[in-house]
Length: 144
Image (tube, rainbow, N blue to C red):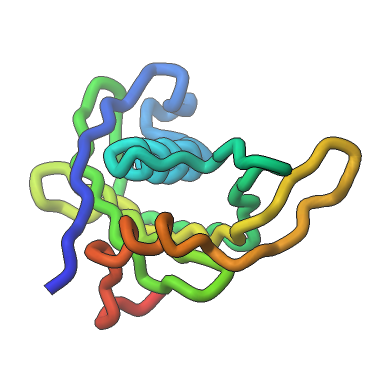
């Protein structure tokens, strides 16, 4: 059985629209924030300075389905699982609930890349030390 990362996210006023509900685009920021919090919990980051270059994770796909509204000041329960861990990319699934009601779920796929000033990012194999920390969160039964 795989592990799932759990956290919470409070809806801020700036995230709401004129109807007083979370604007759809805010969920994309929430997904990224949960990903960053997950990686920090593992002493990882989306940006790692290495010897000759930096390792970073450009997004190549983002998807979100909206199931119900969230409003200002509500606290959302967020969960993250790794649904695919390839040789050069990782896909995360994030779900947001309020009182056990699913409000949104989405996925982010990011590619491991070498980043050097003045050069375009170049995909690279995910280092084993990074993969090892993600492995307990891989949900092989999940569909993205």
